[in-house]
Length: 358
Image (cartoon, rainbow, N blue to C red; front, top):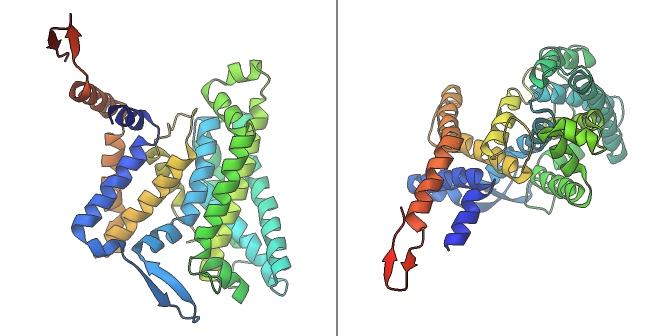
């Protein structure tokens, strides 16, 4: 029991799991029905799952994908990319433009996705080049596309806010007939498995962390830091395309001003809540994904409490500040000392008396 507790508190996942525990406990006391899941028939006549848990898992899909990308960028560059929302707008605009130029079929959707991935990777490499070749701080380098990305998305579709309609897009953005789970949840599961397999069966994760921990030592061991940083920005391009395309399929249009607005801040917070250091180095993708679901759970909880949409961000900021402070090194050190005092085993003195150490 003590050893399990010690392992849990020393784990990088301790912070996100503790935060998730607090959210669950709060909602249990507030309304037990918050966790209920029901089976309903939606507007298309399909039998689907419904409830707050499903809304949290579904609504956080784009954020979870971007949190994975942000974690890798943070690890290898020791900084954050604040242009992910704008890049998703560019990728979504390309996705829509190709769809509207053709009759929407599954091959056309795949072709649109491929075109969006290529364009998003090229833009991501622009930022990656500034970071890796010119040693510009990632937040400053990404500020360029953070500012110019949404206007570029606006120009791609001729200044309009075009919509796209197709049953196939509805399947991607909502439900596939016969499957009661929202498709975005299935996409994040498949994507998470692929990323996990890539990190487990290749040296990609090790190389990324090595560059983030000590770039010079990584270079001396044969790892090319410039290539690793560019590779991570290419992965980021793939992630923003998936997130942007899911959002387009959800609402059936592309609005360059509102698509995934401010999601870069939530992605950075997901990384921090997930127990990952924003100064780079070692990372835990599972922590960031849990962090994304915690942020979405906070949003759903506040809406369930009838908090106005304008005040939700302020309440989220207060809660997140509290979580980050709880997870700070000072509080963690204090908690570890308290744990040691509470669970330290007494030592015997010559087999006669027990002496307790404090």
